[in-house]
Length: 265
Image 1 (cartoon, rainbow, N blue to C red):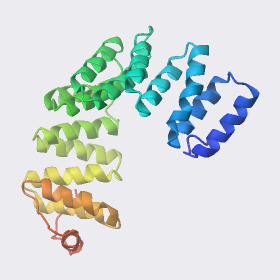
Image 2: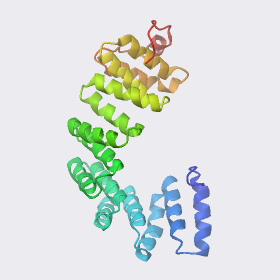
Image 3: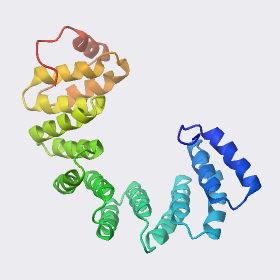
Image 4: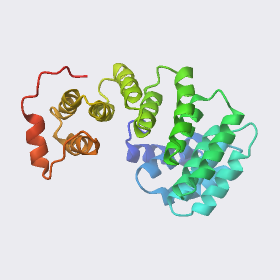
């Protein structure tokens, strides 16, 4: 419970007490490692994870160990560990996801895409793998492939807002503004408080020539949330039919004034 609440120091202390009674307590090791990583003390998590990995034939421990090794700059060791875990059968899918992410972080996004495709071949019904593959295609600037994969994921899980927002972002980046706007509206119908999606919807509307509706959407994002000014100003500036302000105060003044009478999307 402490770990889920991100009370990492409490979780660390409790896991440490459990390990004093039973050094081989697998769950305590996992909680301790996650807590140390959450505290930014990843280097301290490696030794207990290595010991647990030697005692147990446990792909979850091995995957977290690979993550920790990469997190402290021992990337070749971490990737080697993750490759070993990904080679297990039956497959442990999070190992593929972690391996692909670490390889992408090293700059080889094409290889990361290949790893996700390999994982999806082993578990073709996994919507989470489809989502991760779509995201990886976007990182590789393969927008058409991203839209194809994410469309299939949406068909399999139409109520997943994370899939909808990624699909909308792919369409937005691909210049399919009407499609992106419809998908963002669907996502916002499921999660109205998603401010980033509402800001991206505003960009789509402005690109479609609906500047008033787009600016109304941005006013809705900013209202009562001054910390969102930068994101809202960026949305206006990145649209080819938006507005650019040299000073944040000028953008704030424009957005806080009485808007024209348009329906907020």
